[in-house]
Length: 425
Image 1: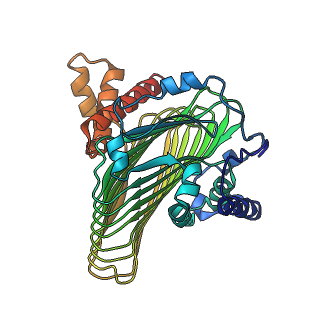
Image 2: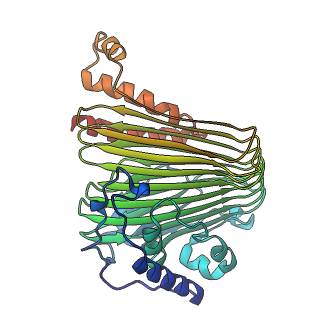
């Protein structure tokens, strides 16, 4: 990595953490093709030569104007090239009720105890420890959200991260703490201002305490020459629920790692993903559903559509720890292949060390059903439109699980636009 680090107003403890991250990054080996955690992946895409900490974006106001999505939100933050461009704070009544939405940099001082406790507290165990260390060492930018107990935030909190310029490297971070019996929705949007080669290394830490509910949606629309890592850690407490959805619509090489841990009875984690791999894109996803306590539930459903020379990799494990009886865990990966040159690799797995559990896992790969396609063509629908209708129906089994109608409609429109472009080639 090249360039000067943007220091900002970080406290001493965070500076020490950053230095530790840099030391670990230098010591840890780069991934190799023979590593099981990188099986089927393209490790040649991971070279960091030429990437740098970038300067300020050229037209900040234009990027802020383009940072629209849901129309109505509880708060909206916009970042560009590791810098805050715009911040719309929550309404006064929500602030008085205890809702905190601020930059990670500000929270590192004002809420140092919580940030220290939860910032990257879970080690990266799915293969990208070196890049997690790089994130810790970099000019982290993002949002800290604390939802106080018993508060229901009425609208989603939106966060936009932009990258601009050839060789630019950005380090987005979102830290969410939902306290007891609270409820919130957070939407992270990742976008490129141009088509230049870029590098993104993002992390989100989600903590859902007793009886709380969190919906977290990440919409990745990086440019076609971007290499990106998105590393997630989710901790779900007693009778709490977290729905996490990853939507991959851009990038050249994208690596998602999702580690979800159920740490108390009654915890539930829904892990969802919609992915379109077109052209020569590669989307590499690794997951871990960790049941530490009994009577908890996890449900993973990942769905991929591949066209051109697009490639996807999925490797997931359900782990039931000793004593975690009456676990309910599901893992399903479904691929729909739209070209002869596309390739989907799926490796679901189980590690069960408790009795009286119900765990299922599986993967399917298929093409568009010829009978369904013929049915639509016979009614005068053009081939491209017919294919798009069928693939959107395929994706809707995931999108329908979003609890908010307006959010679901917005995500559906983004997926449909990307799918249309991918089918046109």
